[in-house]
Length: 195
Image (cartoon, rainbow, N blue to C red; front, top):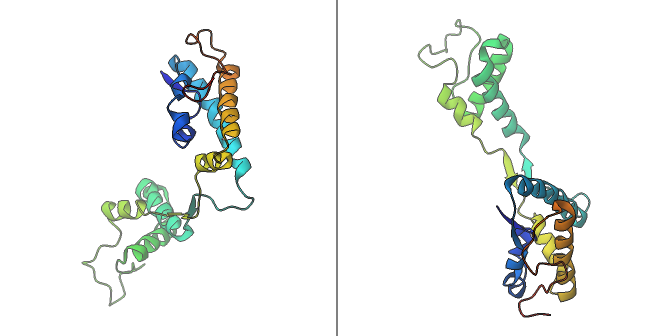
């Protein structure tokens, strides 16, 4: 499998002169080695990215707790209605009906304003609509981790070169490859035509 020694998320954000030559840093690995390297690399990327985040910075998505509650109620009704106590079923149905602007549910049939023609409970389609609610709100000020890392390098050629070579070293230490392309090395140039 094709494996990017410098993670693709970073590679695409580097200045063009570094991307043109990084085919040097695309190697072929067996599927097991590729998966192993990907897992180790993801851990390292997360550590790097978290190290650049300010303490208390908002995550990429925030959860709207009231919409999440609607979704949870609808899921419980769809999956486990028969196993739930009647009072919980009614409570959850009220939450879902209120969200969907359905007529209010009644506990008893003695209420004269109660219309027996109206459904007592949300349909499967209505429950699915409540389950599909978008309860995560995107933080428009969030900067993706890859952007943070590449921005931290700036346009400094020395920093970018050290960054690429560090990923090469990480690849060697992690995968311990037995075979590499002829001429491949950690200290090879990172720019096409460079020495």
